Length: 129
Image (cartoon, rainbow, N blue to C red; front, side, top):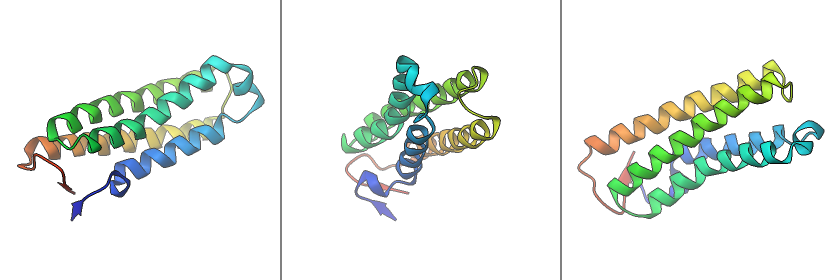
């Protein structure tokens, strides 16, 4: 299957879902009163999907791979921030487990995409999944 737009990438779709879930989770009095932390976790979640999109649109394997590494780093940042939110009781253990599992799965899928691209002969505009 040839992927011709970033919206078709499963990793972008999963990142979009995670971003939405982070926004919904942080829509509480506790988070909103901690403006910097709320902004930081939301920005990191948005960075995951945005870097996947930006890297894809650069139309080159090396740049796409570079942006996937950045996206993977943002995914780890969100997971770390979830621990902080749990520790200061902004989220429940159940919320933490749900969101943490999303970051874990997404990070693994991003890694798999990186490995695929590194082994692939594809260099340009379209990528095969």
